[in-house]
Image (cartoon, rainbow, N blue to C red; front, side, top):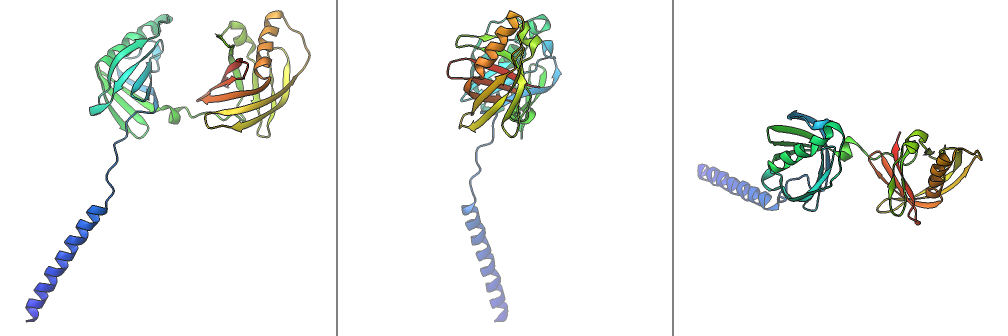
Length: 265
């Protein structure tokens, strides 16, 4: 009698264990979709096989079913499909800029890679492409080049922005107008001829930040071309400007359409 009871008890325990396992399986969260490169920008850190003419780097931005790509010369963009861990592009269009020296070959290198439908593999922030006898290792831009802080960073002017144009010149490169916003909001800098002092009040916004500038300068006079650059810098820092930071590049644009492109020093 007791032997029958023991066997019955063991069978009951097995039944309960199986039921519990089934219940746990039913409660398990379904696995989400595997991560893809979509929504991220990647920059090459290593190339095996055919090197990028001019040294690159290769930059790929994946947004809403499209890809923007550059290997150091023109920018190519078009539709992209990442299914099957393969980069399949279609309808690629390109800018038509002439590039110096070896960089002229970068466009052909990039076109050959993308049209080969390379495979892709994602390991956290690391993206690996393989195709056309080339392996490219890339890192997420946010990891490789995190946005520099507005405060405490010396920002050097690289271009002047007008409502109609972005102006680069040798004079701007020579003068290197610059400013730094301290943690307490004070501003110091160099406008091209004169020293700047003042304040910069930063207000974060959902898309970027607004900076309210109050700037005073010394009263030196320099040659006309230098004063022209300085006046453009001061016009951009007159009042409130919208600020966006992308890695080490700061773009300022105020309501009158004028602004500056600056790079972290």
